[in-house]
Every structure is written in C-alpha cells, then in structure tokens.
Length: 103
Length: 212
Image 1 (tube, each protein chain N blue to C red):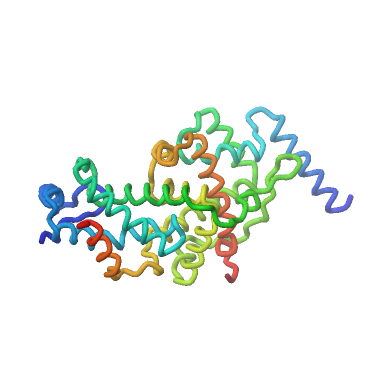
Image 2: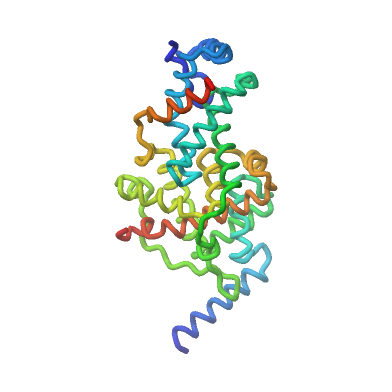
C-alpha cells in the first residue's frame, strides 16, 4: 500500500470514528463550538465532548494552540501604543474641535 | 485648570477623587472653555488609537474623533457619570466610527473564506504539524513584527475586524457588541470565531517562527 493510500485510509477511519462513536464529534463540529467554549457559554455536556475531541485529535489540538496564541498576540499588539498614531497632541485637530464647539 | 481629572477608563484610581470628575463635568456643562480644552487634550491621543484600527485611515480616524468630541459637547447633559468620562468618550467614538463605516462604500477586501480553516471530505481538519510555535512574547518583542501584526489585523474584512476589536480588544460582551452592531449574539459569535481563525492564518508565519 502506498503512503498516500495509507494516509487516505487513516483519514477515512478517523472521520468515521469521530462521526459514529459515542461522545465523539467531527472536527467541523468542534470548530463550531470554539467560540462558545472560550465564552464559557457551551453547555456542560458539549464541553465534555469538546475536550474529549481535543484529547484525541492532534490537528485540532495544534490548531487551537495556534488560534489562542494568535488571539494573545493580537491583544498584546492592539493594546500597545500604535507607532502610526503619534503621542504628540495634534494641535490642528485640537483647534478644529475647539473652534467647532464654539460655533 | 484641573488637569488631574482624568479621564481614564473605568473607576477612579486610588488617589483620584471621583468628586474631581464631577466638578470637571459641571464646568463642561457650564461651557467652560478651559475645561473643554483640557478634555480634548487629555483624550485626543487615546481616542485616535481607538478609531484608527476601526477606520484603517488616519484622516478618517481624525474625522471620527472630531465628530465624537462635538457630539460629546452637545450631549454633555446626558453624561450620567456611571462610567468615567473617558469611557463615555470612547463609546461615542466607536459609535461614530461604526456609523461612518456603514455609510462608506466598502473598500475592496479579501474574502474571509480563504482565511478559514480547511477540512477534508471526512470532516477532519487539515492542519500542518506544528513542530515549533513561537511564544507571544517572542513575537511582539520586535517593533517591526508588531507593525506587521497590526497590518495583518487591518487586513481582516471589515465585518470581522470590527467584531474582533470590540469583543477581544475593547473587551465588550457578546451582548454589547450585538447591540452596538445591531446583529444577533449568535452572529457576533460566528463573526468573532471567523475573525480569530482568519487572524490565526494570517499570523502563521510569525507563529511558526518564519522570516516575515
């Protein structure tokens, strides 16, 4: 059996296992739960199947780690002073605002 | 001029008297020019930083901030003091920015679909193995990389970028974002997840430690 056929067979078996065994969900269903899982609004029964899937699926585990890191990187960068926005007060804008206020 | 007032988000900090802010607001209500100038100078930089990533354009961000201040002066009577004046200004700025976005013709944007996760015909995820993943600290230590990350956030399509900013970075609740954007909470969750997934894909070179 060629490596690519073996890979396909493994994928097929994995897909069948996730879709047909009790307490298992597919990677697509897992993906649908991610937002509610982080929000803490996923019902307890679904949290269990979500976490079980995480234990048995290398791809989703890797994916979620990178997903969380990307969230964190975005948060850190966003909350830092943006170099493209100067800290110096833009005098022309201040003047325009104050002039508009008195009109 | 009371420059100690200020105007930061949230509750007054220790040492900052909430009464100071009440007095300051009274002066604003009375049309005190010096108080108005203090308000503008103390908050303009912060509000530009709020508006810039939403508008993706410095001139448009400045328009938003100008309009927000004008609205604030006009409606100072409605400021109830339940939040700090800076949080109130931030809310007004976000509202103005969202209104402006709605009225503008959308720029050519890439489709979110190409940035979403991939699955095969068996509903299994397709994800290249992660042999190494850089820590967030490693990624953000370099100023050029931070600018690169900021540019990737701005690359997200508008509907998704705005939800990501409001929910993850401005830390509004799902309900607050839904009200702000006049969409359902479920729509917020869907857009948020897609925005995070798209950001993950856009940031992958940095996360994998590749040269940018």
